[in-house]
Length: 331
Image (cartoon, rainbow, N blue to C red; front, side, top):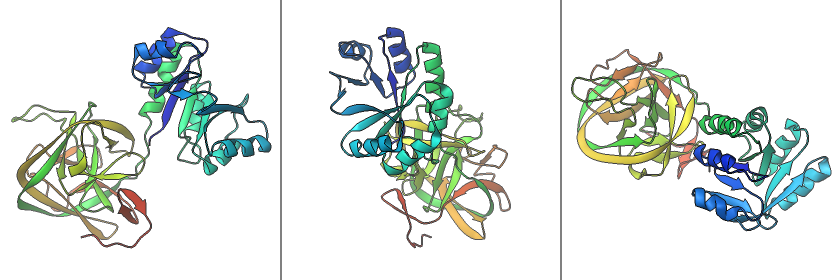
C-alpha cells in the first residue's frame, strides 16, 4: 500500500472537497450530516460519524503530549486507525510511533509539516490527514505529496554483448501518465539488476512518439513497482501501478492503463556493473531504448559493446515480489 492522504473539511466547505477530489485525495473527513454530500461529488472514502469509516468506531482521534499518550496511541492502534493530533509537531515522537505501528494518521496543517512527516524514518508515515482552509493551498500540498516518489539508486553499466534472439512475447506498458525524456521503467531478467528502459518519447521516421508507453521487455521479466516491490511484466493489468524513474533516480507512481503482449523479434543485452554480468531481453526494434547516464535514449539497434547504460542493482532475493534476505542464483 502506498501513502494515503486524507483531507479534513471542517467546517464544511464544498470548494475544499472539490480540491481534495481533483488532487487525488484518498479520503475526505467531514462533520456529521455531510457524508452523503461528498458521495454526490465523487468516489472517495468518506470518514465521519456516518461515513465509510465511522469516527469513534473505525477511526479515533488522540492528542499526543507525553510518553504516556504515545503508549495509549500504540495500544489503540492495534484495533483502530488513530488520528494523532498535536499543537507542535516534533519528529522524534512520531519516529517512535512509526517504528511501532502503521495504523496512525498524522494530522498536518501545512506543506512543511506534511513533507517533514512523509520522510520520518525514511519510509514516512503511511497516512496523513491534511487540515487547511484554502483550496489552492490544499491543491499544492496534495500535488507535492502525490508526486513524491522513492529515491532509486542508479549506476552505470558497460555493455559487453548485444545479441539478436528469436521470437518471443514482449510487453508494452501503456501508463496513464505522459512521460518525458530521461524517464522510463526498471526492468531486468533477474531480481538483482534492473535496466532503465526509456519511454517512447522520441521522434521516429516510422512511428509517432507515444510518451505514455514503455516497451518494457519480455513476459518473464521483473519490473519495479512502488513500495519496493517487483512484478512480472506478464501479470500487469489496467489499474496496477509501476514505478517510473528518471535518469537521476527520481521516481513517481504511474497507473497502468493498458498492457499489450505481442510476439516480436528479441534482442539480448548484457552489461557489467560492480564486476558482475547482468542482462535483459527487449524487443529488437529501433524505438526501444535503454537510458544513457545523461538521460538520453540509446536504441537497442544502435547499442554496441562499450556503451554505458543505467541500471539499478539490489542485494538479496525476491519472494512473491517482496525483498527477502536469502541466497539465490539467477542467470
